[in-house]
Image (tube, rainbow, N blue to C red; front, side, top):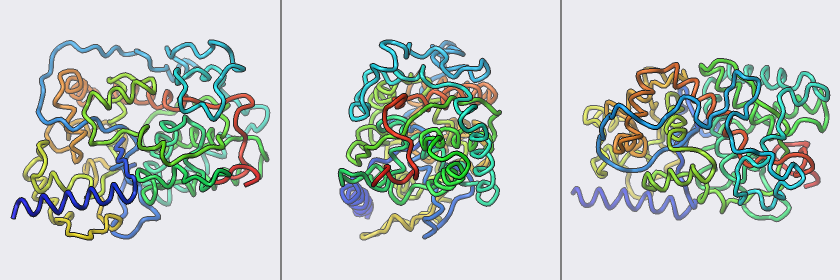
Length: 420
């Protein structure tokens, strides 16, 4: 019977991946808050694919050495110093005119080569109320549905890690006719919040037509979502331009998958300019949100080497029954990452990892490595420190492979390139 169960799970997961070209990403979200249940896909947050990184599939607990290379500043920008550049690689090499063309942006060797062109209060003279309009619109939607914070932050992360922060994820189509990022398996029906971003864009077009980019709107919106979920207010620079290219096939090779080992995930984040420590910090976004059953059901039924707390696993069987053949994952229930604090970005998820109760095997795997397990412990014992580092990492995400100057365009609608 056990072998049959394993077979059914494998068939379900393989069928999903082949049919959707799926890559499952579990960070920003990258989603959080009370979660919609069966069939409520218009309000899905899908934190199981997340707002922020999931980090490998290794079992084990690891140790907690006294020393770890995790300086307070590192390469994180300081949100309280009037600039979100921090200690990033010098983006001024070659100047704005030498920034890569939009078609080459996805392969830029320096993810922050254009970041210096971003400026605080970028719209101060051209659209003075831009950030206030973003703030008011996001807050209005959040008051109706707090889970939107998770969805917006996940949109932000998934956009920035594929082709850079150019709002390419928001496009429904492009002139090329190729399947867009939104249609990729890691996105698709799991996305939540793009309608809110479009509402912000509509309000801004009424106030300042053709001025504020969708890429900046998404960056500002992610900041507002994070603040509403518990972070202190912080500044975000503007000046991003909107891309005109969006390719579904670029998603699997740029968004981390829970099937990858820790070293590969670490390298993937390094390719985007992030250290392993920053990767662990971003995982704390799972303090809010939750995961669909199909992303962790194998752990419930003991078909994975990364063990789940047995009591939690037994309780989850009521919510996540064993999948049968022809199982429809779009109807899967969702489970809070941290039921005791599912609405607040407070870093509490690290305590779940320490106690073996992380839903995702990729999150629990942080305890398998000496350095990452030490960071988990330190973040769990110092939530204030985690919030500072998370804020800096979030700002840094918004500077990945940005389009600036005359690159790209300023879309009239976030879901379509101009003239399409």
